[in-house]
Length: 377
Image: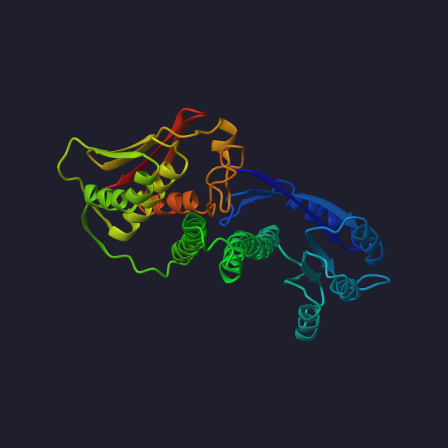
């Protein structure tokens, strides 16, 4: 069922019959917006003069105002001028029995969206109101998207600064140790300093690569090169990439499939993004001497990829937060694990390119299984 939204409409006219006619015409008004799919209805209120309209709008600005131009006291144009000065978020439709080019131009300059000449039919009124509602909803959605972009941009910069500040500070500290000659006479200390610096640099490189992958996916600027790809080859390449880190911690990685080849029409780079994220996380959040099982199932219309680990696992509440951008699960077990918080968001966006989905089955202190399904064509 579509979500219902009620907009307020204020009809301002010194003719009671006109106000009653507008209320009656719009009593059962409803429309469905294309952008959001919301069903919009109207709550109609009345004002018998421009002065009364201003008092009402000061208390509670409407979403749409139907404004008669020729009234005793303050005219509609003057009310429109007041609205314009307050920068209210509404659509104004001028109604008048004295239509002229000059009046239309004046009303438009003051911010009127549309212009109705008396007498008008209920159908003409509804058309004008529908257009005003659609335009208002589009403008509000655009403003909300712009606010969201600014919020995400600010969050992006904040997270980027935070994520880079810590490794840069650590590397700077290690370099000062080397510059001052501290520990250089002890090969073990020297090697540890170099290894920690390289680890931190690797984390920064992963963050930068993740950000590039994310922006390419969201901007649509990355040219996709689709061809028949053997999914097992991509799995093997990613396993080889993680082998050094896995061997260092005694973690075994195995590949299981009932088929010698599993072919899908895909961009090989996108499949590698999927496997790299799945396998690197399975190793990163695993226990020393644990295991990672990569399974590829060749179904009739889709390929199912699952990667299981014997790692720290997650609670149901943690799983629910998992796929947001810059989201990292923070607890005692993950405190010392480096990451950008972007990998799983990238994973889900990449899977969506193949009408696919990502699911997670996880148990704390037991392990996790991530499953990705991809349509073959």
